[in-house]
Image (cartoon, helix red, strand yellow):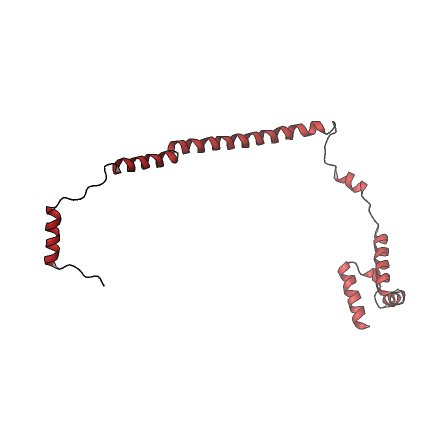
Length: 155
């Protein structure tokens, strides 16, 4: 444990320090400190140079963005010229419907019957058709599913 000086010892120490000459610092200490400060300031760029560097980077970024936008606009207008002179139009509804394969109701029902026959087998399918309701009386696909479900649960 550290012991503190008494009042008398402390006063004696103060008188002794005041009467004797104090030790002075080395003569080149101030020059060394100032030189180290100057080197540190030279090592990092001044604030003005950093701001200029940021401005240059921002200008470069703006030029890149502007050139990208200009290239996109040029491509937008040049692509129709590269299409070989063909007019690019959206076809009318009638043209699309005329080109598509439209099936009649009978074809759709026949396809549905064939799928049911392949799933149920010929004999079970014929039993299904002979039941109280005819499969053609059911108009929606949900109705067909309900009819099949009811038929399977009764079997």
